[in-house]
Image (cartoon, rainbow, N blue to C red; front, side):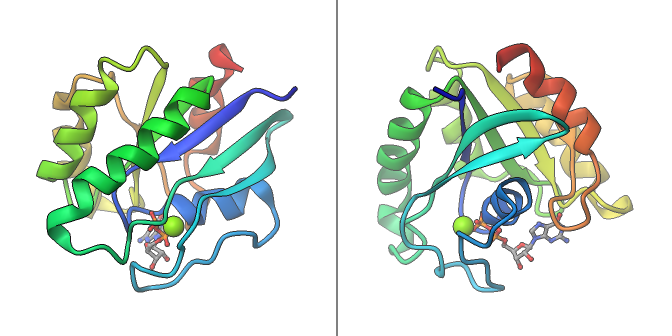
Length: 163
Ligand code: GDP
Ligand code: MG
């Protein structure tokens, strides 16, 4: 079977945008509002010749804020357990949030290799967020722009050891 990559992270960081880019079909809904993608999506992805099964985690965007961490945890843990490597995505423009820090704490104990992806990194506005991400204890973040396709080669280099 193909190696599996799970894309995880809080709502609206750009997970489905990356999924659509790598899977090449619009299997996941993307919208300006968090709350569009309801279920997990899976597809066969390709990146500079690497082939893999890709999981886009979602299904909790419509939950109220109080229940979000717990719902997200269930979804994230299931995907990470199945994955050979997990792509943990943050929004570098928004910076690191308390929810990002909470997710990072479970990921550090998960046993699954993690690649930290600092998305929305096009332009200078992302620089403080990229710096903050270094403190998550998950290695150096890969600056990336799912929307603009920047950072593809660096993502390839980060994933290649695991797939
Ligand atoms: P998800 O909830 O994590 O799946 O996030 P989505 O993929 O639905 O994206 C949420 C919003 O962020 C959408 O408005 C996207 O167009 C936007 N977005 C995604 N990637 C980027 C990026 O690289 N740069 C910027 N500026 N916006 C992005
Ligand atoms: Mg989504």
